[in-house]
Image (cartoon, rainbow, N blue to C red):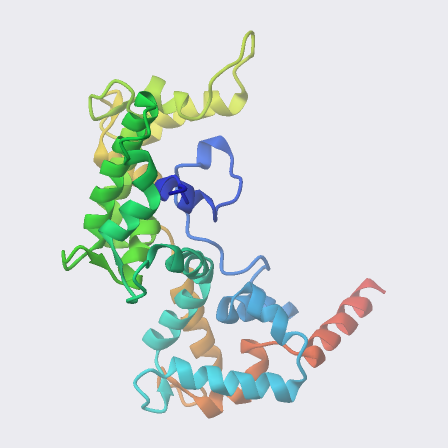
Length: 316
């Protein structure tokens, strides 16, 4: 059987973009929008935060009537308890859901390849056989590679068990998402930290020293001078990363480094949209209130045309 993917590492990096070497281990929350959040100059930020970047472009091609009609249908989906109001929790959940689209699309892309028996779940055995079956076969006799694949198999099995919260050996879609993207789930933090230490810790002492820390980012060529950013990273290691000043990064310090506590932009945006739309100040918004303020939530051909006219006027 042909190896579809070389373990979860290949699956994960299939959806990442190029980042500086010193940032490759750090899991930042993606921005809600590429635009500056400045309502005085338009609502592009709000549109992309509420809809997702690609869907926001689709709305920009619609007439105002079509945009409002589609927005009304979206509001019905956001109102999960069907009480006629959109709460902060419901709007926050929706925005986070839209921002996770790239992850969900990645999971969808691979789901059918692993759900061999088409039961809507992926068992560990299904995943193992699809990913590693050929390389674990007795006919595959490359000893060095076989050792590497067995190590990856062990690592994947540990991660799968952590994602499989009910321990039944079968992953639901949410559990499989946690398996492929553990950095997105609080209960998978320890796995992310453990795998990072294992990747960087070359002497096997369970910690990361300065040489290992820099070596993971930069290996000089013959006669190559050390870039300025490497010198900066050495200072970061001693002054910020190594919090107890013992010369090593332990699991707690690695956690602070690769999983930094960040502002919840989705939460802030949900509060902003409610504040700007809630006319009766009851901290929740109705479908009518949203449609009355529809151009803050979604765009259309008309809003884009108006903004283009404003830009041309400013340029003049």
